[in-house]
Image (cartoon, rainbow, N blue to C red):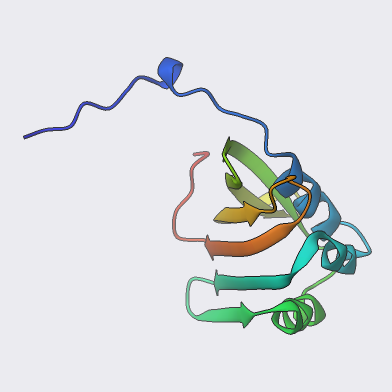
Length: 134
């Protein structure tokens, strides 16, 4: 049995305002401002691959603070390629660039509060091994 995949025209892409704002803040000189965008029961997992090795950053607010502390501030930029909002979830596919050159692809999934203003759960995976823009 084979599945029929709907054409691109039947799959409307939707805005992802919270994740767009999240990554704009992450690219700024004050990425710690994302801490204002999370709930008290926030949980995250970021799987960060460099190609040769990988690290996972996970936890609650403290886990996000650890991740933020080790980042290179304003060195990598996030470029969202596609995204969708489905009920209380935003999902994006993107890439990070260093000095305009491709460094890695990533996907991010966020579960939002009912009002869509803050993040409850965040899962991000990053790898330089797969590129979507070539």
